[in-house]
Image (tube, rainbow, N blue to C red; front, side):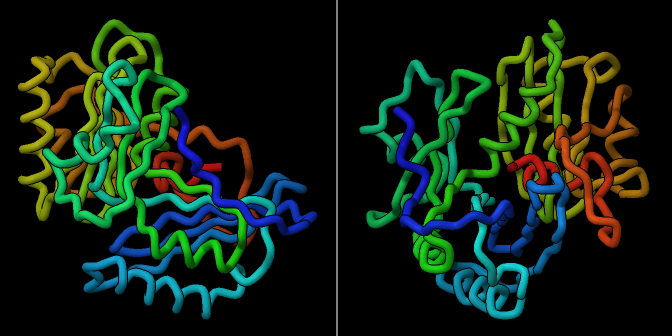
Length: 278
């Protein structure tokens, strides 16, 4: 049932460098893992502004590749992580690869020429159906040959599940990125809910969290909430959530590598998807 998510071209290469690129309309981030020393040797981001289409995104990506010398070398493995809201989780028991468009039509606009694919989650009985950027795939293939791509929500949920406890109580994870955040709720190591929300201020942020709390009938004084991504204790978002939810903590990535000395590593909960993608 797993789709052909690895695009291949036969290139003999002995390098031990792995490249992971996280890509959205809002920017590109990448990191390089040198497996010979188990160390991140490059870790950087390029924000994009006023990008509203895959065509504009490709032009921005080309400029990054032209300027970033670290990307202009061969790699052992290349992974692209797509960040967009063009996805939907489907229980494995209800999934058929003949009905991909049907799973998306209720929460996103699907065009006739859109290519739809899916990730099978290894840690739960769910399939993530989504639309990747085909023009970006073609460009990456031209640069490197073989590469793999996934949707960020697949990596997010899998990473959370891999370290989650089998608690009888529901556990909420809030993953924050620019102008958007994701809510993942687990119960007994099973996915109870995944949803993404756009926000412009702290009031939007807490509204959607409390709405989810109410819908799932969670007790704000009892359930555990873990924060991931672009948020810290000085953030207005954190202070707002802390006002309403009693048990708050920061999650932690599960990587086993180190960082090159001159790099400033992110805190344990930041860049959760990109750095968990290896």
